[in-house]
Length: 228
Image: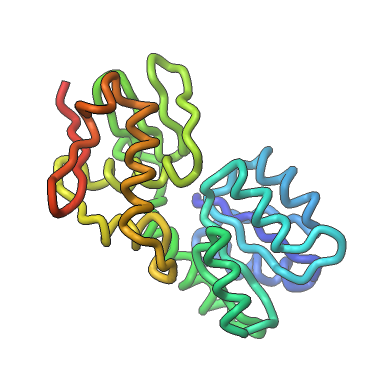
């Protein structure tokens, strides 16, 4: 079952939401504070975090920033604020979606499913492991291994590689990569894609100037080659 970390200091809300999401096939773990959320995220390795912004102590903004330092786990923010500036702040921090309170449980469940589908998270299968050269991309654990040793990728570098891996052998345009890596609401320029492609190649290519795996299709985009 897909595991959702619910973070909200409203224990009544988390209890009822847990019961509803269970009916939709989701496993949930609950944190009632920002500090607990970080501990649970580290221990439980959830597939998604649904996070309330307004909490005492460490609020949702700080939790989001701390999570993004360590992980690319999808995040949906819950908030009573609906201003555009708050939404843009969330998306610039790497949030995947934004749900304004009050909301229906059915709407939230649909948003969760949509985000999971967009980032390609599903039940654990062998299809979630992609091998190229001496590397293995494990999408369930969200890590890249070489000779069973993890490669230190940033969350953005990992997402970029994962998108290319899910379409291995097919050329992905720069604009498509912007949407899938940064989200439809981000206004990244194609220069950002090129910068992260450069950084990614430094970590996985033996000769980054002559890439073997992440190849450029001039004037269009990039493609991940799986051949030995």
